[in-house]
Length: 552
Image 1 (spheres, helix red, strand yellow):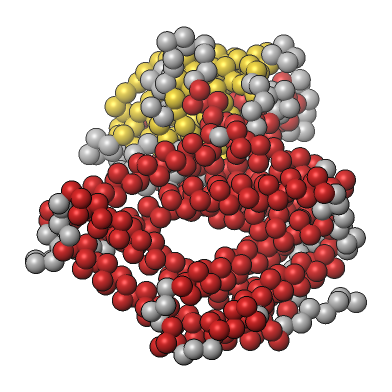
Image 2 (cartoon, helix red, strand yellow):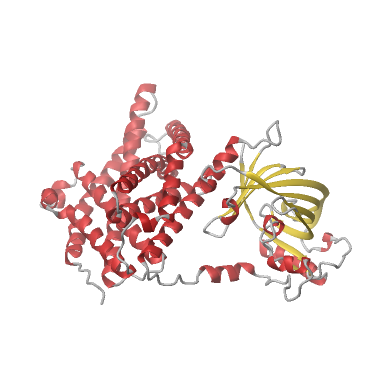
């Protein structure tokens, strides 16, 4: 069974690699004491594709033999700056890679074959620290590493220390790192500039390579607060794109990378991963539909993009079921037992129904992600990104491209106040408040508004500042999406309660509690529907007045 945790650690090394130091007595740390001193021999083999897809995307895959956590490990960074580590047990044949590992990294490799790239032999001295209550709060590992790069047969060796946080205890993480760094600094040990052992083993640590070859001008010293510098880099503004081809390629690269990361987080059972991947899939679908499809240059490519859009809708269907479980879980947290209405037995039965549905939804979603169709979608997106010049005909200037896409988005939204739908907006809110048939239209508007909003978000994230009209379009779309999302969530709850009521009837479970909850939910839906039926035309009127002038 796979394990998952967020890796929080700092690496250190001697400022003078030739120096030698005596063993460190960690018992001097205030409010901490040593509970274990363990010596381990670790053998690790790292894997990647011929094109180094894993390394290029900051993903590490290794098989480790020896130590308390031997097995297959996958490490990856997410967009929030967290480092995830996923562990899988060894098979009876310890050299064979488990199928679950192949499926996990397929998000990055797209099914390409994996090869052994580096071997690491590590002599580890592991010291576990506990607080006054006996909680294991951190471990300090002194690693003597000998690495062999299989592609060059170059062997590299070094010594480093890792301080990794374990469980939360009485001593704060900041205090643990600070206390350790005081001892390190006094011994001439500083924060390492190496991000990972695999990078150094492959010769990608420039300072280490310079020291190894006896060159001057590079030091191992590093700021004691690396997170701040990394945050500053992440806030650096993206340069304004001139060419629409480069602009669209940048958008597609960012979105496909996000989809890759959210898939790995979802397979890790990371919090909010379902919502994140669902949003990422919708963003990709919106860009393909509104910013790519109108500019495809040939019928074959057009059909391929249309197929990908249809499959993305299928993917979002699988994600929707899992997302509905999250909505329902939040709803169930708000349900209290009430004498005569919701008994303890009824509450327990509802939890059992939701647990069963959650298990089914998870299995359905994993089947979708494991399918050949999903793999083909990921390959299609990469192919599109790498062959834009041959596949799409865009306006040369990115400003003009943005204006044309914005015009198209406005046109799509305006269809919902056209002649076909005019009868929806004529009646008063009171007349239509209980008409569920209008919900279909409301949700179509929500979906269109969401797609338009995601397109404009992608443009801005890629370095294209929105002008006044585009910003107003974004606000209108956000208004559609935010207000109708509440109604959508209530409909999810009502639909589930209706299905649960039928199940309860068949099983002769408590139906009074479900009926009460369903009645309360229906009342909220009526109120929300009335509100939105009266509010949407106001937004549509703003949309009608919106003009997109050609930039001079």
